[in-house]
Amino acid sequence: MATNTQLINGVDFIAFPTKDWEAARKFYGETLGLPFGKQWGGMPAGEFETGTVTIALMQVDAFNIDFSPNTTPLEFHVDDYDAAKAELEVTRRRVRHGRRSTAGSASRRSSSDPDGQLLAIHHRYATGAPSSS
Image 1: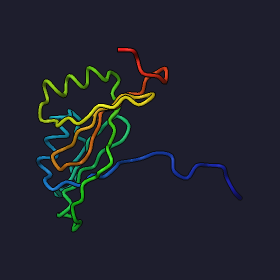
Image 2: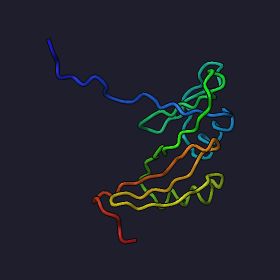
Image 3: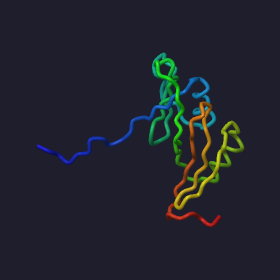
Image 4: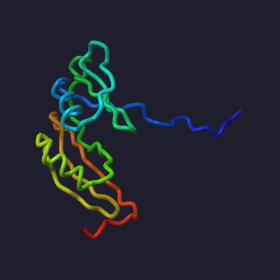
């Protein structure tokens, strides 16, 4: 008997590789201010919470995996783009800022973590169009 239930109904976590667990832990926890979830036993890996998706950071050499940075950005949602940008620029100077783009219905600024993985802060405009500021 067939059902109309959806097979996949969420994302538990997304794994990001790192070459240096301690540096990544400090960046995601202290620089970005994400709450630490849990360490993966004695392994150099652990989880950080975003409120919607857990980010699992794995020092890949401990898992016999070759390091390759993620080259498409992980987009962090922010409610107030200008306030988040200012906070990262002033009090968290270790974030390397890339360019800002305003495309149609969103505003975003990209940067990278200590391993060179692309990250961005992102805010969709409620009306679907950019504000005039």
